Image 1 (cartoon, rainbow, N blue to C red):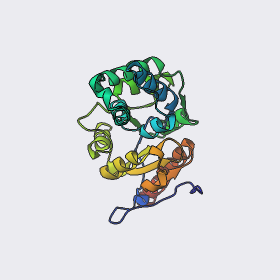
Image 2: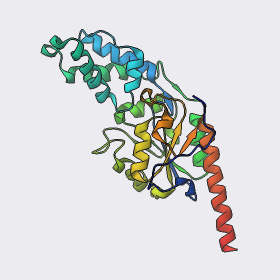
Image 3: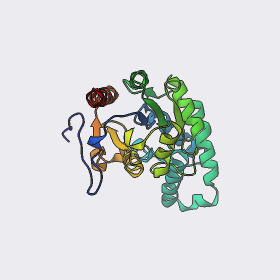
Image 4: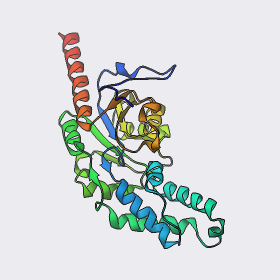
Length: 259
């Protein structure tokens, strides 16, 4: 599939054209597949938890396609697939045990087989230098998300972390990103959310936030373009450049209207 250029844009009918946002005061980022390439240790932890319960390993690609809804949802989905293949497992395997096993194995592996994507730290630093508030919004359980960020030195460059268990709902529910705007004292019309999957695009659109996406990551095995993000970036450095252009244009406009 041919790549779209920086700032690619698409929208659905009856949706405001978010290319018209006059500036950007808040940028939130998804974690897995956007800031951090964490698939290796997620896959290892998931298969270790399944093995503890006498369940055969699942293929790596299958597990990666399920990343994005949080650890509990991941393990429930994997267990459901295993039960379809071996219904007799239902007599001795409890979902709570599989989930607890995953969290324990993942907790021990955090930072061992993951890496920050190129430019992850720099984009957070640059945005805050511009006066832009930053957040990480993940469906991963907050305790685990915090440990991932700490392992890669990104936690100190964020103003807010929201995990999948921080609020009554998680992405793509509109209340999640609206909560971020409220806590950081901003306006959803001047906020963007950056993610790698349809979950992130849906969350942004539902909240009235600019839906920005990266062209790498996991995306559930579906091309991210299919989710119709407002803008598509090929690396995180492009995000900072685009925000700078928005804020520079906004400053010039303000000077023109006050002169």
